[in-house]
Image (cartoon, rainbow, N blue to C red):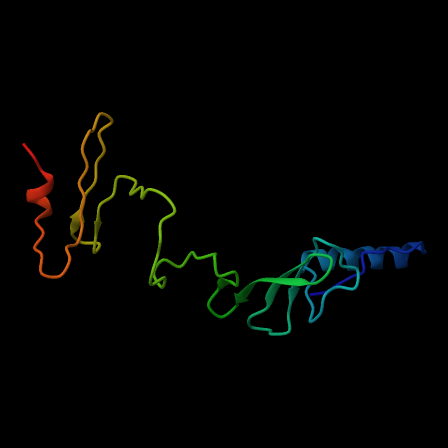
Length: 148
């Protein structure tokens, strides 16, 4: 893991080769270090290794660093730090859809039973709506929605 200022000086060949290898090492290690690389410019992505087991991936915007994610080496996971990024559907206690749910031909259930199965017809003119009722009112959505 290394960093470099990305400035290769005019120098003799052996020193040039060493300098070039150091630049390539910095690129190969994602500019790893405990502080931002000295040659960082707007757009530089670097790995803050202050914590050896959970380093933080950072983006330098020209004025300061934006922390993007921590990399958990023990669990081999990426933990995004922006609260609007959520890929952990199992632990997301209030998942929300931004559009229609496409079940891709699968049913919803516990993995052994199909509790809800969906199919679409291009010429459909009806829908199936499930709505809860207010306290004290009974609701029979099947009776109220299905008309023959």
